[in-house]
Image 1: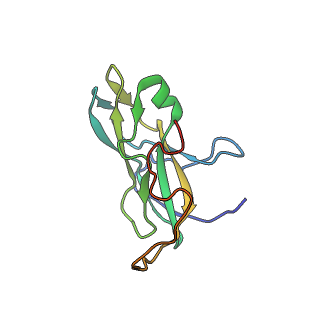
Image 2 (image 1 turned 90 degrees about the vertical axis):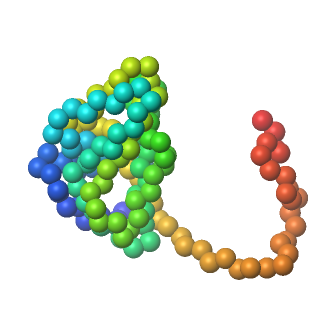
Image 3 (image 1 turned 120 degrees about the vertical axis):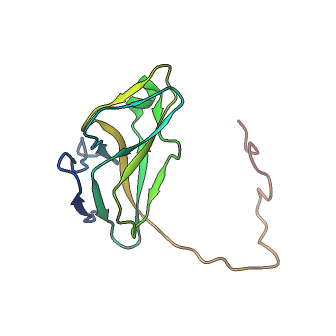
Length: 147
């Protein structure tokens, strides 16, 4: 298992450091840091503060993803999933939550609302060419290999 250190700066007293809930978990749980409950109506989006800023190592990103339990039980997910936090971002980490459920959803203080995966990033340079090498698949696109 590969390990990296991420610098964490608490911006709100109630902020909780992201943490893994099991030994082999891929994602760390992210906890809301709102002082008062935030109600998200059906079809609405709310930006939920997490109360911290961080400094990722160069060549890493944080991927923010929904929690499966909130999605399957309440229809709560992220509108841009996965979201990306770049290594040079230093502002407060916030998570956009959308309510696809049938009733309003209340985000309580220090609720586990999303998960975060730290992943390596490779940057690419495009080489402009006149032709590309052929493959067996060629230009066959969506659904070309079956359902």
